[in-house]
Image 1: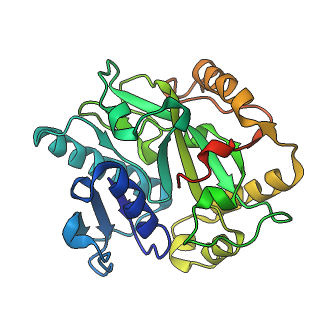
Image 2: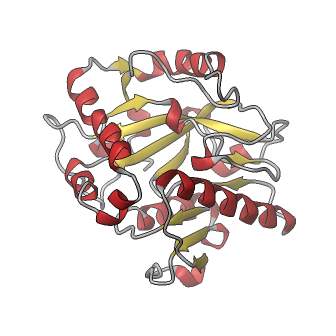
Image 3: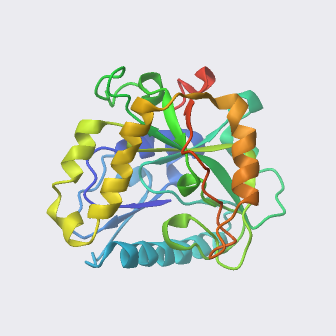
Length: 272
């Protein structure tokens, strides 16, 4: 399940990827605004348009989390056993080394209320990588990522729950970072496309300026930091994010020191 507004880039990627993983009939897309165009496959999936409510960024994040949480509860009532909620530019991936499908892996018995995937914020290396081609798997074109607690999100619900804004935490519950799950965030996958957002007046009026400025730091990190071996660093990242939590939100993973950049292992290249 996801919610989107004015997206011209990620919706089709989201549909193709998750439709292949779980079947088109199990996709739920909420479009923020009655003016939003329906995707080409809308009759094969569940698409709902809701009235757009113009509000500041943080208030909007909380509103979307409440709406999606309510929708997830209704899906559990309909008989679903797992609900995955992501932003439209986020892709939940099972490590190919696990040797099974994402569906089969997620359907194994689970004791925890939710599962989190290790967050990888993928960006463009401005000296090594060309503009993104949407017709080719992204990870064939991008090999660097920032291991970021901001994207280590509790996006897999094993039972009804209430997400906090941005799905960064589950209210009233601890988080559990799964050793085989990764959340690839592609919001900064292409520099030119990201620059277009900085001129989006609707976003700027809602207080996105500081957020976008922080996000653009990813390009400098990838350009200037020495990349670590991903497989060597991932176990340490999970431990650190689980142990070093922010005192103001103990049910959220802690940020890593040094803003580490990693090389994405080759086995992920053909997945997304």
